[in-house]
Image 1: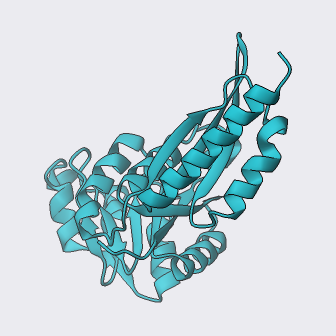
Image 2: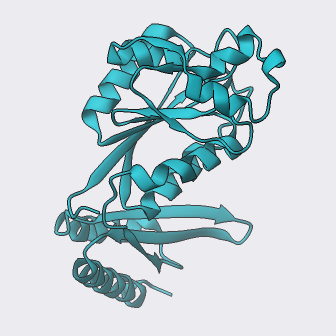
Image 3: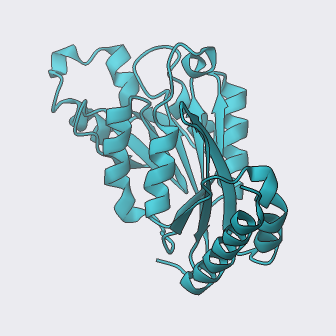
Length: 248
């Protein structure tokens, strides 16, 4: 664990996500999972099954952040091109990896390992494999890039298996303050001043609507407990003052 912020990006790969045919279920899961590890998910991109776009995104994101996670595109069909794109991004060869074949053989008979299924065993040179206890087709890790399946259950299992090798930071603590009965426009200016004086914290106001009307929550997030408590005290004092001053 390191005291300095650890950052990450998530690259979601697949035409089916962009078309709306498949509803992504991985972004929220990965974001919450990494937050618990003290890793800040700073960016999410969604790209189609187009080689040049995948390669460009991989190279941009892996240079910008400590970790890059990808989901999708490592199956047996012609449009599963993620492994080839990762190899191209790193400038390394790719071929059927005997270690990956052995993993596939735990679920598939050797005589049934046709050309399509062997595509799932093609791994960029120098990559470490990520075990997949569900379908056995592995993910892999090369440099700071973690390549995982798009199927949520498989992605989650791969993420569990890759966690021990990740650089982690100090987990973020979140404080929720109910702004019941106060519209955002009333406290926005005061909240902005508090946020400006606490640059090391993330302070946001989040409205929601239900049949009972609008409700607002203010969320304060950070790693320094003293700063969190100071900001919370100031925000609660602001809200109490506004409630007192507001005509009934």
